[in-house]
Image 1 (cartoon, one colour):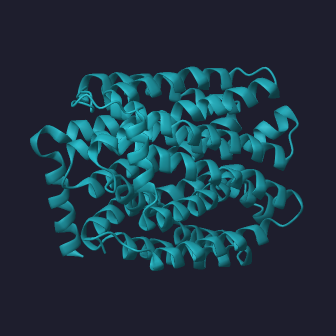
Image 2 (cartoon, rainbow, N blue to C red):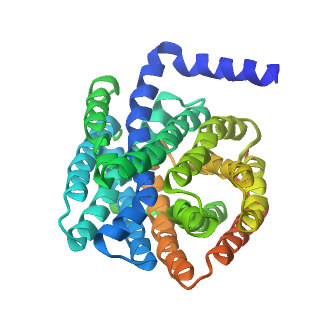
Image 3 (cartoon, rainbow, N blue to C red):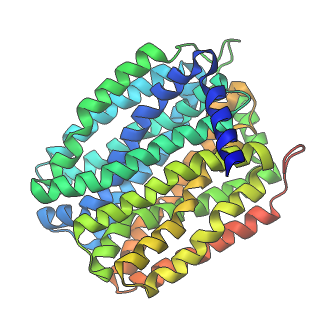
Length: 405
């Protein structure tokens, strides 16, 4: 344990060296707000159902639209991150989310809500690729660790956001739980503007929209390693979006817990991620993708199989803790994918992979909502365990590029 703590302290010192710590903080804070507000939506679904008279399949579609918007914009976000300053793109993303959230909060009917939510997702989608490209420039030797810290900040937001939104919704109205994010996100955008260096990545005059660039990206994507990792990401996005969209509703409907308790368990799920993601990033830097990814997915398979069988609150806490390590997936897979592309097309390539995989995976919430509405909530979670088993098998069989493990 002492060696782990010592290694962790050394990593933190290295990440802060030469003034890089303030850049990491400026990138991480808005990311925490963006993910915290997005993951507050599943906790607020019962209130939205009641206000707009929606069924489980319909609110599942609402979450699918949020995720779909978040998927579609990642390729344009990657192209913009290659062409312009990553700091500029993250600032624009934060501002657009503020505008979209305002429309969500003041939606007079379901139609406006169903238009505003995908715009919210689209605005959010401009942020993650720019974030990764900025971190890859700032930390060329420690991308896994830096990305793990950044992702952990997102989990901190997801830890605090859902239970806070649920508690505020129970006391006031559901809109109040999301509304508090807006002034904080404005402040985060200002921080990015002043702290993150604004420099164009295409310094050599490369046109990131050219046919040559497109061919380069397609050539990289056709490699066996990238085909495998794209399949892994599609399955994981499907699993992730289905699981998180309905976990609080599942706890309320099937386990009989209160909305506040469901929000706390959902927050606990992400709290573990805040610890797991930096460790997963460090593991990726040291032992490579294969074993790091398998390591964070084995426990969640067991937890998902046990979930339908447990009823008591303490056992629900234990199972939630068992499932949580899957949150380390992103620090491993996204670091791996980013490092497969040359610097000049890194954002475009990563955006293409994430857009394709997240778009396919966005079907998860609506399909899971249909299954749940037909009375197969428990069976749905067992099916998600099977999806993770397939991800583990693909990871084990994936051909690794030279120098990887």
